[in-house]
Length: 481
Image (cartoon, rainbow, N blue to C red; front, side, top):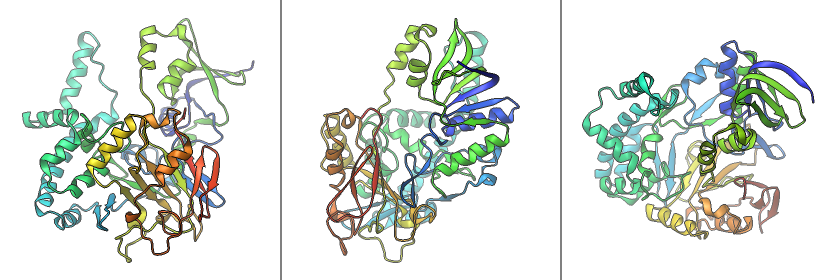
């Protein structure tokens, strides 16, 4: 068993959070080592080749709340980071051929909504102003540790005072509204404020994805505020951006900034355990037996892997371990990365639409549809059709695929119970292929719901061609499936 010199800090995992922490530690003059089990850095924020010459953001897919402070502090632009704002930020195609976009320019969005409902267009302006103001009260907490109200004495009062200062100037009406958003449902909020089902669906597409539950579940209204938190270089509320070079360009830039600050990054270096003896941290032990000493260890791994897998049970209070064991971590989404011979054609999309506008869309026809999907899935069944987010990043970024190939990402909202081993990947793929044909153009259609698209059925490391299809797909199934 070999032993290496002592570091001020060791970071386990080179995901975007671990790399960012390491870069700041290195900038503070601390000797810092990052240990990553894979042969590349990035964690879930990576760009990988999924077919010869074709690359995709294999897990995360859109930049949202990357803080402008981090971009500036680490000089990420100088390390190659470039983000192109999504515009529209989202759009929903409906079965009747109408497409409703949500533009970055609010006046442009209002003009779109007026085509559907003048009343809803006017309501949109009033509600948007209210939501953005409430979201600004929550924004500062992203750069602060969460308050520890269980502390005793003056420290507890100081924490309360710090939190209270963030809400200076808030009115009693706004406090009531914040409480309502934290406890109420998105569906009820939309039913109270809007008359058009299409306008309601536009809000739905931006708020409840990635959640266990339907739009009428308590607490789902909070998404209205969460997605208005700021991000991007210019601190824009509700920012969404395509990252040129794929999402891995973010972590490559952060890793470059960290190295510039003296941080050492090692890949293919899996950590077996965090070495704690008699309550005292000593460092980490790698799977090959190498011991590395450190004064501080940060873990970019998940709580269960960190506290239940890397630290000996005798070193932690039993009630703390039980609390960690109780954390629900199953993901509600799948991710399918495709290589297509032609770009998906959405019915109703004007022929002169720019590639950027055709780069993302959400397939969910109504709140009732989304609620029904969840009701079916929570009983362990697969809905006949799925709510799917689609991003065709190669429309914006020509570095991802050669001419004549397209690399869309599809995120079906499959919900937790679908991943408990009862169903095969093939049956889930069959549901995925149950996309409504009315959404897609069929002028040159062959055998799939897409127009001349190349689709493969898929497992964790398999690709089985569907009839009439010509290219490659790769799926990422939640861990434990």
